[in-house]
Length: 292
Image 1: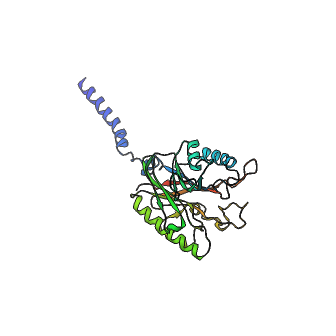
Image 2: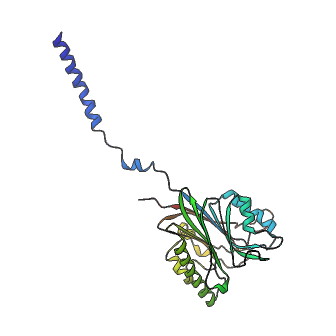
Image 3: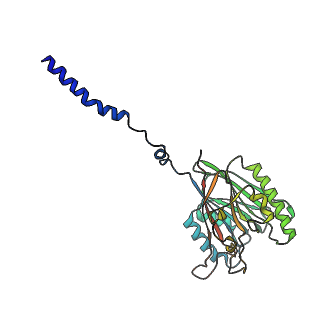
C-alpha cells in the first residue's frame, strides 16, 4: 500500500509539471497594450470673435451669437469691439451672464466713463489669475486681456487682443510694436504655463508685422487645414468685404499644445437673414501634448 501511494504521487507531480512550465513561460503583456489604456490628454476649446460692437441691431444679433455659444460651450471666448454705453449693457457682461461664464473686460476708457470700448475674455473654467495691459504705443488705444484658467487641473494662460487696423506702412509698424509689447506682457505674466493668444490681429498670419509672434506660436487654423488653400479662407464676412482676408487668429504654444480641430463660426446668416457680425468667428480645439 505504501508503494502504490508513492507511485500515484509521482504520477501527479509529472502531470502538473507541463502546466507549471507553461505558466512561467507566458509572455508579459505588450507595452503597446498598456499604453492604449492611458487616459487621453484634456482639450481646450477656444473661440475668438469680433462683435462689431452695437451696430446693425445688436438685440437681434446677440440672439444668434448666444445660441451658438450655448451650443458649443467653449472653455474660453475672446471678444473684440466690445462696447458699453447708455442703454447698451456691456456686451461681454451680458453674454457672460447668459452663459454662466466668468469674464474680464479691458478698455482704455476709465471705469465710470459714459462709453467704454475694448476687449474681453469669457470662461466657464475656474479663474486662477487675471490681468490687463495697455499696448504700446499708447496713442493707438489698444489693450490685451489675460486670464489663467484651470482646465482639468492644468493651468492655461489665455490672452485676447485687437491690433491696429491700418493697412499702410504706418499701420504695419504700429502692429509690430504692439506684437513686441504683447510678447513682453506674456513673458511677464504666463508663469511658465501654456499660452493661447486669440483676437483680431488685422493682419494675415504670414504678415511681416506678426513674424515675431509666429516664430514662437502656432496658427491653430492653419495647422489643422495645412493641405487646404488658405488664401481663399476669410474671417472678414464676405457679405461686407469683397476680398477674402483671414485676420482673426488663435495662436498656441506648440511645445505644450496640439491643434486638433478648427473651423469658422457665424459664416452663415440667421433664419431672418441677419448676420452675427461683419467678421466670422474662429473655433479651435487644442489638446495638451502627451507627457513623455
